[in-house]
Length: 499
Length: 97
Image (tube, rainbow over all chains, first blue to last red; front, side, top):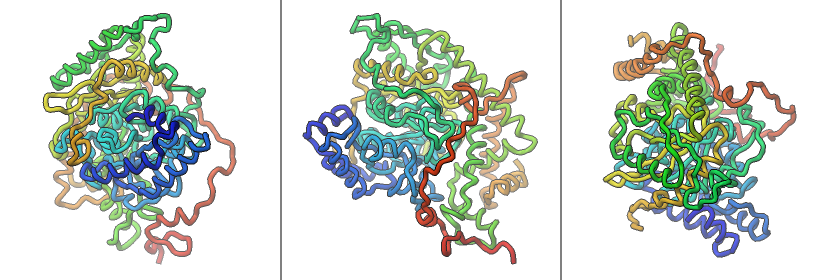
């Protein structure tokens, strides 16, 4: 089931939003073992569904009205808990909705919220194992991680526990779990989508985006969430854009050859994305996908992003620096966890933070404090910001030779739960291909392009130039019209149930 | 990384590191800094830092929104999240005797 089909069924009254919502709530309940959701409130969801049905009955619906969506628990929501998968916010009840939630919900597009999805604590992690509520499981093989940090959202979409979900991407957190779970996800240009109500990790890198089975569905969701928000001064003022406008259109409008819709498209293939360390099966799948794009009329050219490897240290200096500042707000006074053991105010802060944060969050806070401290600031923080500019400029050089960039999302497929959780560096290295798009603020997406021998999904990454989301979705949509990877279902899509 | 350094960083961050965790944490931070030391090999003379990607996208400015009330006062909803409160005030341990 896709957004498009569900929309038809809803407006033709073949299905009601209440029926659809009940169907998904039942599936979520049956698939509890996947641990995809942190909080589900059936009564709230059904109340929204009834409201959506009313809108449809009155003919006041939009394209997304009545269609269910799940929100990553990093977005604050009225009614549902908003925890960022941290003990620190374990009981936090937000008095307001994040802009993204508001725009998708009853005051905006009329989508029905199914609940809040699991994630790495404060979005710090690449496997969903850093959740205070335990890891979500990869529906393709329950012994494997779903990726992170938007792991629960990816699991929920892949296992059919929602039609679509929101995610956030600070260093790959939409794209990598999308790749590991075989779904589609896009991180828009920095500033496209408001960060208001998104629990902050690294503010100059965080960006929200949609996750669904297909690129065309992501386009519909982009229409709903993009736009300037006065409550986020870094959101960018642009003319309203219809992200679905190019779906199905040929890349070159003067080309009428329907079998080669991508004629004229130049795909840049960064040679650094195929260097040593890239899993052989991932490499083969990406090469096959590039051949498919060539069959659709595109041309591949080799380009260079020479600082790809350095994006790891740059990111793991800058993101912790911003995190150490952002997370200083958690003091156990106005909201959040408060320790029971303290003698004075200073101890109350310290004990609350020590008990409330998980190990990886504390590591990043300490690294951030280190790189920002006197004597190290210039060598680490400032130096990283300078290399960040070089990375951003390298992209612009590459884009003089091509329209989009393509390569793997990650150097590996999903790994076994526990395999890397003891070694933070091993986990950081897995982010090598996703980090630089965040550092530069560029839009980037993940689309399913194959499986390894053991049946784990592989994701193709596409990086576009600033504000080129509609073109990227157009290109991805042509690929998905020609391939079936995005419509594969995990065998065990609901625990115990074979489909 | 020396124990004193870890303790100092922890203090700056209002965190506590139990003694039996210092060694493991020190190793983890060492390896992260080793990774970060790769940055030193790059010549960045004459290159301005890019503090924010927005600078690549649009001219930097400090936009001001109209000074209008957009949010309702939600004192009770906000206070409901406080770990300890009394008559609309946040409670903390006594600071001055």
